[in-house]
Length: 459
Image 1 (cartoon, rainbow, N blue to C red):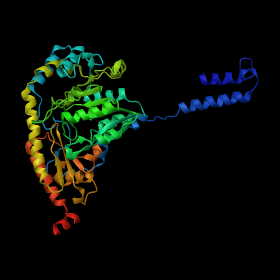
Image 2 (cartoon, rainbow, N blue to C red):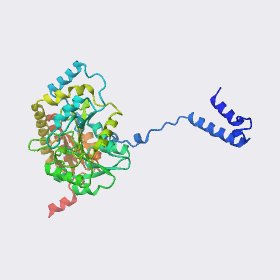
Image 3 (cartoon, rainbow, N blue to C red):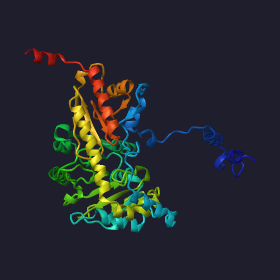
Image 4 (cartoon, helix red, strand yellow):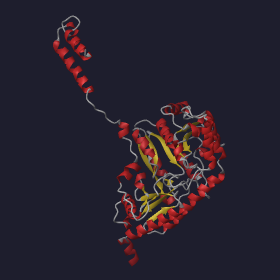
């Protein structure tokens, strides 16, 4: 017998045969039956909707690139200067010691099971010891291991912010910050970086954005997409603003120590006196293994401002998904302690050389203004759009560059910074030279002198 039939029958007849509640009020009984029938009919119809979080999740890079018409010139092999993965072309392998550490971890068969959600205690100790310094000491309890630096950033934003809060994000900046925040109902406020000052933060503009709902300041140093490295003085000025307004810092330091000779990298936490900091990093870029997915959060909280609550919150959030790869955790001690310094130096020399080639070549191209980086893997190039009237913006410029020259650079609109494009400098040297030659040809073909320039020449 259909259970719904029994419910309807009981509603009509009632326990004493006089209808619902025994008062003979059949009108109410019928009304109840109609409501029950409606409930049943609703359940019988498919109506599956995506969650609000999924609707609000947008990757700006994917949104822009997927909308571009990218049809390379069939007469020229494609050169992609758009992908921030140093392993793509095979010219930047990780060190043999790193590979051996992974092989040893696998062969030991000690790391085939689940690890604690925050990572193995021994692995956390290793990371703490590697990054600890007198100015910013660390213990194992200050380290959470994550599935890459991206998950570290995700956990850091999620533990600090509620829907309706806002975070301060660099512009141009890594698009993931906005992707994560907006999906959680967190407002993103963009503070300007200054290309004429090697992409230093416009501190006055940044400070003007802070209000009572500002719960996090993101500082990315060294920078993606700019390749900038902040001086000690500039970091101290950033910390002063954060301290004045009692805003914690999320320090994205995935490119930490990837700086060119003549530049000095200092972690934000090493200069902080009172500002609590969640520093996010990982193996991906410095060790050239982005697919291994091991990152970390370093909790710097000298004055116990985060207290137990933020730490406990991070632990709870880490339990949603058991993230960091256990085999890499088993290899991390050997990776951090046995990778030779020459490996790091060789990588840096290559990145600096390619950056210098790119900067030198494009500096003499009419209509382009490259900004020489000081570290990381990127170089930003400004487009003087008034000299390229065929194109409305950087997206059209880079789209046509693919069509005519088979060179793909990421338009900086993806980083909310129009009329620039980003070049990844990890490609083989000969490919970088060829790409710059093609970019020059493209610009020479489309460059137009402005009427203002003509007037100046006439004078």
